Length: 263
Length: 334
Image (cartoon, rainbow over all chains, first blue to last red; front, side, top):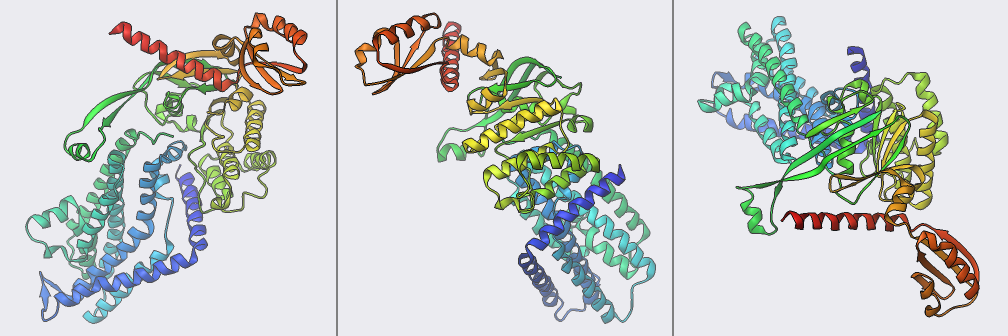
């Protein structure tokens, strides 16, 4: 079973790469654009930290780590999650999801692996550069356990982002047009560029429990700094698994709701 | 092979009167009505049969095909296909069937069809040996040699449809649902598709259900037809018998040596068309030979043929008959 899906994954990846190479110009441009956006993402940080030493317990260099994680995850989101799942919305509107549902393989797997934008990997590299710069400024490196924890959290963050997209896309089965919902999701994700302790009161509850942005960027940054308690790491893993489980349930229910577009 | 008993599929749709005001109101309050897409139909289809679904637009043909392929859940009734309940969508079931839709495509738009074939091979777990054999066969029969390495978006509609059909047959489905597979194709491409579909059925013993608006498709492919109208089954049987029932009259086409006046034709039968040197008359089947001998005696006939009315006409007559019957029933009910 696992081998079969790995092979399927390989085939899907192959057609994505073929596609990427077919439109070289387009993808080169996308890479350039994503570098540009990363630097625009850094701008507010410089403004906010002008004449201030620390905000909500985060120094400038530490907050850079959060931006680094934000950039890296944006690369994951836009390179590996959004392209495929935006395709689902199209499929639902045009009724071509029929073909996906006719295939003897898991529909969620099939729709989640149809398209990858390899050029978005530039974001991941930019994220790394930001980490190196931030630690260089701090005059130290991350601890090994901290790095390992951060790697685990990269996994949970990706899972969380993916699950949230699945939930968003599931809504498309009911309302058909979800363009606005996907914009809404992206604007909310923007909040993840700030350390979560910046948000106070109701917002902090929303961003921790309802839309777990804090888990995605602040936790791994804290882990790198060696400031993340073990309980928080365990909670993040458990939370991500629970979220993935929930999104799977919702997806399965939504599929039952699919009415297909008439021919 | 396929068994359908008391199938119903009702949809709830939101109904909105036209106009901006109504559109605004519908943001807050929506009226729903139930659409009975399929309202209680039953039939059995045996292995290897070729069956045509006929009916006007919105009759419930596509809905029925989608229920049979597991895409839609029936509201009521029992459906089995080769022992499987379609809506469970078991892998074993999905590997046996395929639905081809003339208006929707599964080919990857920016990549050559060969890539879609490869993807389907992986998804359906087709053994390499069988894949090669199937592909060779499809490439030869459908003349795909030149096409499968070109990006799909560069293919013409007809070429794309041939590749679409090939992509659907990579796993050699035992049951094939074809929803208007020839829509928009030119006459010769339609004929190619028909010949191929028929030979697939004969070579692999596949069961086949076809819907089409082109009566030629149905006449060429389907010895048996099921007529669905307004979600109800109104006929199930041989195509020939259906024509006999709805329009038993025959058409006699006369080619004439020189033009004749209309008055000389009317006593022979109902004049369907009359051009200077061709006349088409419609007569009851028992009067055919009498009409012919009278015509031969009285008119400058050079050639003649006896035909059934065109299938299109037969169908539209059947549908308007059904409509009249429904209207009458509604009046009695009221």
